[in-house]
Image 1 (cartoon, rainbow, N blue to C red):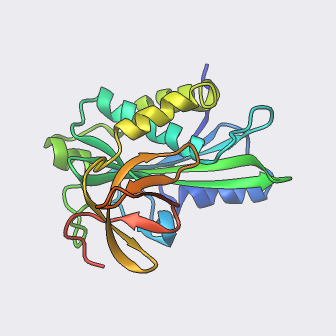
Image 2 (image 1 turned 180 degrees about the horizontal axis):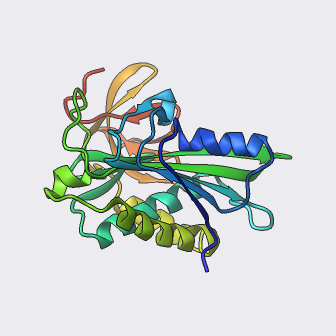
Length: 250
C-alpha cells in the first residue's frame, strides 16, 4: 500500500504552487503527490523558469510533514531526493548521470531534471516541505538552452512518461517514508559519488564575478568544499555561487 495520495492534473501553472495553495487552505495531507505532463509556469532555483513542452515532460510535487524524526539539516532532503532520481534513471538505462550541485540532474553533461524544495519551519524546526521535480522526457529540442537535454535526446527513443513516474514513485516511497534519516550518510556518499565535475577545475559565478576552483565534495549541510590552484580549501553556500557549464556566458 502506497503512502502517497496521487493526484493527476491535465495542466497546471505549477505543481509546487498548487500544493502551497492546498496547504494555505488546510487541505494538504502528508504524502499528497501532484503530477502533470503540462506545467505552464514551472519554477526553478533563484526564481528561474522551468520550461517544458506540453506532454513531453513530467512535473510533480510532494507534500511531506516531519513530526517525530526531523532532518537536522534541510540538505538531507535534497540529497535523498536527488539520489532517488539517480536510482530511477540508472534503473531504466539513462547513461552519464551526474548531480550538478546543488540540485540539477544531468545526463551526458546536459540538464535533464531540476529539484525545487520549499521548507516550512515551526519553532525553528523543520516542520514540512514541498518537494518539486521537473524532468525532461520526450522533448526533442530546447531553443536557446544549449545545456538542456531530455531522455529522448540522450537515448534517441521515446519514453512512456507514466512508466518513468511509477519508478520514481517507488524510489520516493523508499526515501521519504523509510530511510530519509536512517540512511542520510549513505545518501550523502551517493550524492558525492555522482557530483558533477568532482576533482576537476571548474568555473563558478559569485558576487564578485567568475572564479575557478575544484569541487571536492558536499557536506551534510549542503555546502560545497572547493580547493583553489594552490591547494587552499574553502566552502561555499548555495546562495554564494553557482557552478557554470563549460562556455556558459554570464
